[in-house]
Image 1 (cartoon, rainbow, N blue to C red):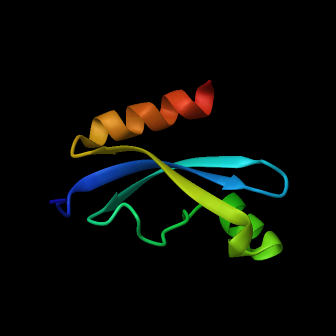
Image 2: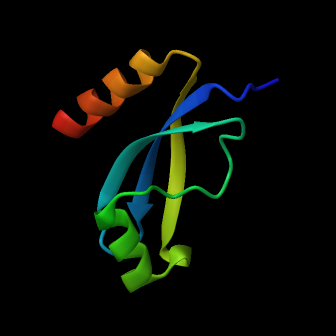
Length: 77
């Protein structure tokens, strides 16, 4: 059973131009409809339509630091 203090690290991919967005989301449901809060992802979803993006869950953890460390590693590599 998942708890409210779970953190997911996710990757959202634009299936049209293959751009990806990495993020962390605190949630009790990793399969929720959350698609990020950054300006770039919001603008891209507005431009291309939500149906042209898919989300992959890369990690589910209760360890907030672990989630943000992985996010940083994925963004910088």
